[in-house]
Length: 499
Image 1 (cartoon, rainbow, N blue to C red):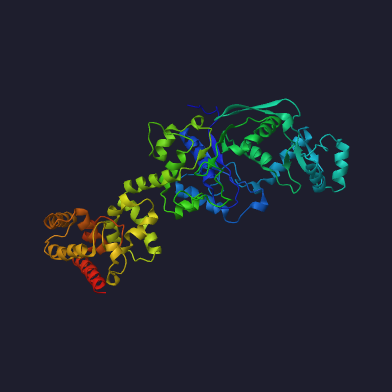
Image 2: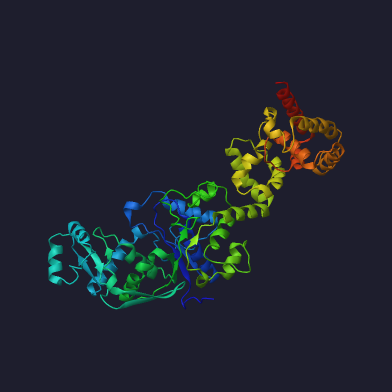
């Protein structure tokens, strides 16, 4: 097990409020949350809103809703508060400006007066910023500032040698300083860049471990040098591998058209899409925990509490991982099957109501046990079981192509329906077992296969090709209604024959 540093474990998730939460960001947050909970530490939410052009109103609300839905509790944040806030970067500008000034005064950074035209010319010449203001005299810098020229503050990156850092997932990593530029720390409008702001915040919020995407690894040497220049103890870093599209090609991005899976369906990549698609939060947590990290013991299904007992950042696989959406569908079906009726009913009721059905809660409690093994998603409930809650008086017999089962014809189907009516009517009790026994004997006596008899009855009473089990369905519908529907189906077949 990777031991935490001597200081208390404090991890954070620091998203930019640029819209709905991408599932890759949620996974980064999840790993930070699991590590904090594993070591009895704190998990902090911090909003990095200093890129004002990309900030989308309402984003923070969406971020908090995603965490609440998943059950990932936050110890400190913009909603929860805390002693080391504020937890929104735009409310901490004076702090960044103070430390940017300190870096300049201590020779670790400098004011750069390069204009947009100068920078464009440098890029056109095939290079980046050429450090032309790095070594100007203090007097020259003061004169340019006094003349009202706008400036940014850039970090003085070492020009030679190596910067060496330790990544909890990849081990020791080395970077040649000569390949790195003097990055902007503070923009001309007084707002910090990520490079400065996250370091100031992580220090003042006493962050001990940082989990972030592998895209930040090339910036790691810059951040190491800034930490060293400030003289502060640096957190331990874990750069997480990328989530790839299901085919293993390309990063799973929220800014591109969603990758379509093998079945042609759009793959959910935003937190709200998982809710809308009918996934259970426990299944999504299980799913995300198992991408890039393995619980062990060949266990595919495990709770968040179980993951906390074993999670270690050093066990994260450094390789990028394809997004195994098919596994999520399977996991979701397993969690639905294992859920209590009392847990599922309040989740399924609004879905049925949104589909236009008036839901009788007592009937729903009887129906849910019939559905659990058939639902891959909560959204499946309406097409599969909506007929239980539709207006029974408006029920119409399905067409022949639904009524007539495989290797059956119209006459045989009509014989089954006609013969079943008196048998079902004579039953003193109408529970599923009694029905099943009676119709099994009917099949044996008439020479039809059980599947042909049961399937014909199922289609007659539900009007669907896919539905819950036949006799359990008829038990819920009741004897009178079930027989009425069979009679309607028989009449429909007769009418089609006559036509």
